[in-house]
Image (cartoon, rainbow, N blue to C red; front, side, top):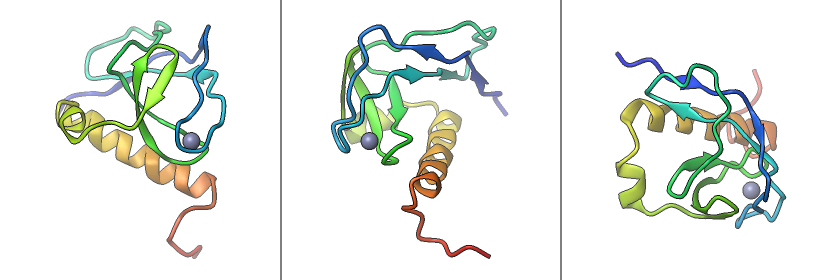
Length: 104
Ligand SMILES: [Zn+2]
């Protein structure tokens, strides 16, 4: 089993807006299957992210522009990172009230 690491959160110098909900996304943290040693990492073209406002999985088209990912892009993500991203989508759905599950 590969460990998943998370960098410190960073404010983006030229923040993108979510192409789905339009919210300005001014901060991010990086997940990796490689040790990031907790260093802040600024996203680069091709990195996958999740909008915590609308629970959309997105890709950085440029460091300041987001778009929906292609199926091929999602298939290149490390399986454990992809699984973690799926959990983030569920958490974002719950935070934004989109969750289909009923409270117990
Ligand atoms: Zn969004």
